[in-house]
Length: 194
Image 1 (cartoon, rainbow, N blue to C red):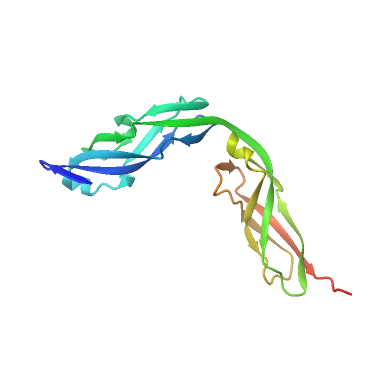
Image 2: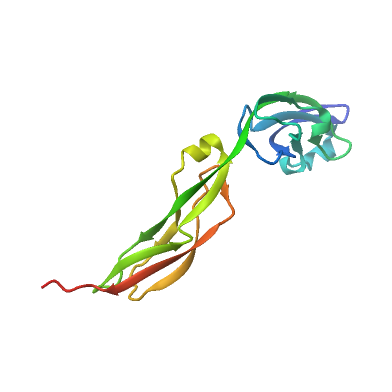
């Protein structure tokens, strides 16, 4: 949206909210808004070159305690190119729910797809390490009993092999010090039926 008067233009931008200085041992569970709509004013020539990536809204959570808190967005929390002014912030505050970090040890499930070469079969699949410690918010950790690996295709294989695989943590709001594991697939000649 553009509004021009006396060489000054006003545009609206949707900018993601970033959180900084989150205390160790605290997790963000939810926030009332992921983006903030900003109206900014400046010379038309300057504003034409402003991209959303040039603008940032950063909220300092260094004083956060477990529970829900409201953070008001001040002009100082908005990082803009010089000579551009903020005329409106919507919403002007964000509610953030934080919890203490929780940790849990879970097993790793290797994901194996495909079939070995004809006349061979998968005898066993082992993962090293077999379990890992994950951390995140209490509610996210409670939902997880195991973590899967990326898939490993054994199509047309005819011998035992070992491969490093990434853990599939993408859809989950948890972390682990381990991002990969070693998976060994033991492939043996299939037993002939008598």
